[in-house]
Amino acid sequence: MGYIKQLDSLRAIAIFFVLCNHCLPADTLLHQLSLIIFAPDIFFTISGFLITMILLKDRRRAEVSSTHKGKVFSDFFLKRALRIFPAYYLTLLLTYVLEPNSVPRYSSYLNFTANFDMYSNKYWGELGHLWSMSVEQQFYLFWPLIILFIPKKFLSHTIVSFILAGIISQKLTPDLEFLWILPQTCFDALGIGAFLAWVVVEKNQIFPTVYKALRVLGPFSILVIAGQNLWGDFPSPHHRTLVALVVSWAIAYFLSVGDTGNEKLTWIFQNRALLLMGKISYGIYLYHVTVFNHSARLLHSFNKALPLPQEIKGNFYFFLSENLVLLFLLAWLSWKFFELPISNLKRHLKKEAPKSVAQQTA
Image 1 (spheres, rainbow, N blue to C red):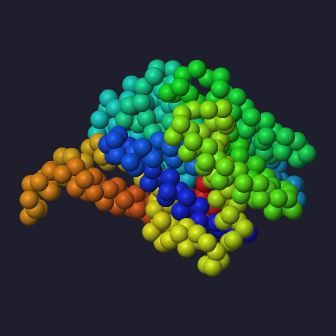
Image 2: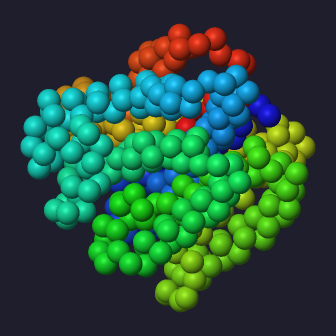
């Protein structure tokens, strides 16, 4: 099974809706859609799938070679740190230099507990979007222990229990605005992606059956989401669970068709612009708020020299376009010359096999 490049397109779609949510006026259609297509749920489902895939394959290799699983965990976490920490801490540094009072305290961002701090003190701040990075890092700390050390015969039950814990937590957590940033309320999206990975690695013979089920559950989830937004809430699974089922349906579709160009929708998800946007999506996610909040001074001086009418230079969407160009350039430079070289240091841990789905950046 090779690299699932279509997942980069899924990331691109998710980051597009992040930008719509954070950058467009609340009354625009795309902003309203971004409240329905909630990007972190897409990222969580992809992460649950890829991280579980990595861990299950690493566990299998460790058992064959009699490698201690503690070594597997430390290698896994080091690789995650090389991929996540540099750009993340660069974002904190840039934000602090540009505006030291952007958040009440930086300590919770430094140790990836910002989501708990935001929930307890009811604030978002300039770095509010980084709550999802806290959830991801918390997931990376305990999920390897589950996947690596629980007996294999209990893995499926554990993952299903994990999904149910997420659904129940969403029901029991009282704060409707901030409940979504607590790790336990994300367990369903992470777990649904993880369950699909377990099927692919451990029970591949039932993948066709699971895919058939997702081909029903995915469209059904879309209809329920549409109904919730047209007619208000009614008894149904939570929105996060529904989005995770749709994303898992998409992942299963990618797995079933591979890179076949004749399949429906394949050409969309292999679009080169989407794939590139997905590759640099981490930097876009990290930097976009800082860029938009602090670019005005730079762009004001630049725009004064442009031979354009003031009604164009003063237009919101012209300013937005300039910010997007800056953001995409910064994200590409960060990915190409900062994130990728540091992430590739993981090759020094051991001689790596050719890139597979289990090694795809999560």
